[in-house]
Length: 261
Image (cartoon, helix red, strand yellow):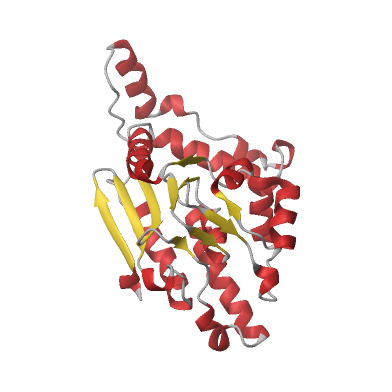
């Protein structure tokens, strides 16, 4: 199943493609289990500074969890808990990456596909993007941790609408709800994402790591007052090589070349 996750590197960017176009890139039980290892490998690669996630073809990022698995993998409370743990581990591996992540949405981003996508830092779609959480149409329940993440992005009202109506949001409405950061024409999506990835990769990895950690703290603890003091007292970035390269490049009127240290 690991061959259904294709990893390609281009410069400082790595792209993970869910390669199941005939199934609209539905994510199988086995495939959920492969995400953490693939993501950890890219996070540990110093040559990679930004990670993109996309689906093969133009019909879907992912149409969600593969329902064909459910009879075997979700047919008892024990199996259901194991399945949910796999999904959560994949999502937490994505959210926990020290490097910026971008999900690219063409067509459907539904159910488990949307659950996975909201754990990336940025989501960009084209005008064909359609997002939904149809759990109520399958008799499924989504837990506190996942809905906390969704509520943080989209707010309580939009989260309730998505879950209780199980309706599809088009690209425009998904952007208005905070689920997509940008929406562009289909012909412009690749070039837009390439430019975005380049901007991110050319910026300071030290700054990215710091900002991702701070955002994660705010999501987890809810407010600055609840964040443990040891997490608030992070070492200042002014002691990093990236900081001094940023200062020196500004003084020399040139593009910075950040070492990531």
